[in-house]
Image (cartoon, rainbow, N blue to C red; front, side):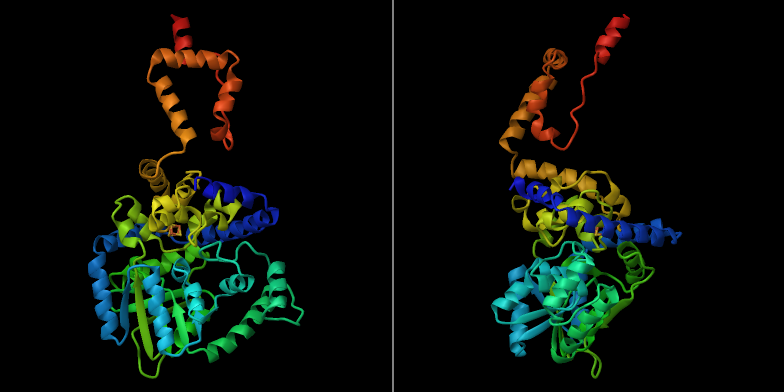
Length: 455
Ligand code: SF4
């Protein structure tokens, strides 16, 4: 598994079209975010408030979830608890079967991608229709998400036009203009919205105080899914709960500016239970653990659960913006994926991801809830080495370094050898390390030699 991210990233770097698509898209989003953030005078205070609320949630998570359950059920909804993806998938599948649903609508939901809900539904003979534009593109192409917010960021307009002409707009010739492509998707989706009475959504936030669930999106398709069907099932990671209604004020300012560089989200849908004559007649909230309580047990690593999925860290990351999302082998790519995926799956399942970063610190600077991803990456690297082990070559190199560095005589002999034309040997020994770094040239004289020379 050592080769996991490394080999996938090398393959991605060989795709020049992908690199162009990624560079163009991330540069545009970065510029929009920077402008939107610069408008807010108290941006730092908002970040502090967001980080503090998230830390408080993690410190009282069981209580907040019980409050949420009570509030949802008091308003006519039903709450289900799922220990893992298999349990959550079974709950949704059973609900769909109980309602005789052969098809379900999906609002963009990274949590249901995490548990591979579509595959579980398909295995039960139930067809899921993605309704988010980019998710639809991925579904039609048999592809998967490469960005938290723009899941088809690795594709350009002409690739999407060709895809649509082969699928939802078969027999038609489309323009590459985004409006024309959106119209083709809209025509396809409207028919589904009116026909399919069962929908599954994710959630950006849920408020324990009021039992309200919030979905934040840009297209309006999410609102169609959460209001038109008769039955709505929301699958939510347990970390998304917020204690009070007023907490939304902080996150609804932080999220759109960090995510799409907008002052506010075009569509923010918030619902609390069910209401006669308005919206779905039945509402189910599935609270998913799937490794989250294990993440909570790590005092440093648990801050990964503070993430509000804005994707700002992806767009500023020099690694992600070159290799794209698929190299991370998870629905959570980029810097946050590098710390969240190994913790959710267990370190032996993704031991290379904590190295999928340059530790430049850009992700920490961009994060609206101040998640210290660089520190967490170093912490997880240590855990991987302690709990999973190190490759044989690395162990041998570090043992040799320990011998040399722990004895002054050996250290000075090694310095002289390096200068006496044995540089080639050092280059050879350090080859795996120096594949992506410069091995510095030894100086003609060490500090000690210079000091001694001065008398
Ligand atoms: S870690 Fe921070 S910047 Fe990255 S997606 Fe999560 S909230 Fe956004």
